[in-house]
Length: 379
Image (cartoon, rainbow, N blue to C red):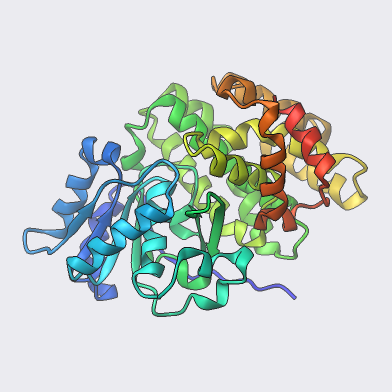
């Protein structure tokens, strides 16, 4: 049996940020805590958000989100949430800030360490409707966390885990492509490849969810035809809009589950939090899709053809080489070695990948040796 659930109210388009005050009023948020990072604040975006709340706002700001959010940051922001008497959260930034805000929304209203709420610890049922209300305002087009039901966080023990529940989904997503216009080319490329990975992996997931399949394919079409434009022409408004839509669509769809690309990225990102999640996904995609296409069934072959159609390429046998080619054209690292990742980490990466929640929804069961082969192919 499948569970199909789309619940976020989304304000989408240029100028959407202007709806923030009315969204706060709709949700009864009078004293929000803004969760962001130092870079987004330095770019002036936090000030733009505060301006929308007006002079009578009682907002606080936590701007110390790390690149890969962790349990200590959740504790710090939760303490500020309580000390400031806040009644809701506004996440402003990329997936890291949004995921951290989700962790705070849970932690601020529930007792216990984060592992108590991790999916792999059986903690989904521990997340209740008491979760603090959250408005998400993305400033990148990649993770789609603004509409996702999960928060990926690094625990105190070093594991990178997912807190996954309908109660974690932001109550409102404000998707204004104008907030992405200043994103540097390499970050545009890395986050864009994250969106592409979401669309591809969720479409290949064996779980039954036809609406998610349709959303994922349309998101892939938009991302594949616009990512190079967004990177080479940062001011291209149409490309920015389509990339933000693809990001949102990938996350709407991935309630169906992801796969080995993400189980590997989550694991390695937990070992080395300095590595960018989208960059890792871009590196792992060709090897994982090749693994999934080997000994393919008729259904899987048909899925590869549908991916090729969405990407506008000749056929399913071109998907893997085109993924590698796109990564090179965007100027992203060609392999793990460029990131300083060596074979001495393989054992730890594989152990983490096998335990990750995304491992279970890959279309083909991956063994320890399969993961080792994928890692070697991604060097």
